[in-house]
Length: 149
Image (cartoon, rainbow, N blue to C red):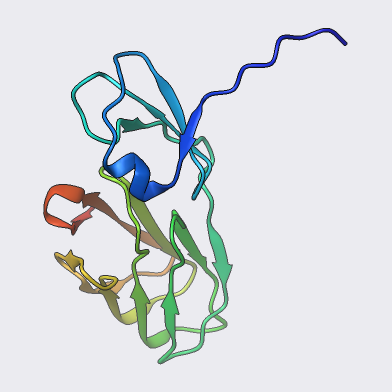
């Protein structure tokens, strides 16, 4: 097979956070394997969104705490029965505009959604109906997750 190899600039999340690339440059974040498109002005560039973002399937028990690892995009929950309470800690190292989704096949009477260290979250306490879902969008400028419907 004949081909031409192309290697893009690459670096860690912290390296990207301090880099403003020229318009049209594409770089690779080696921490999460995401691509970033630069416009010559935005530090860190703009992340390209993955199709079919990663998720974790969980079968939690009442009173459990699920702590999302960095760059996780969703929890798909299938508890054995209605949960009286569940706590979910949102992922650290979020990028501006990231969305985190939570879906459950059973009712969660008291769902508490908490921020990771150094972040805040709006609207983090709620009841989630069976076969329902909720999502949050991250704003990097103030390190806040905003509840969406």
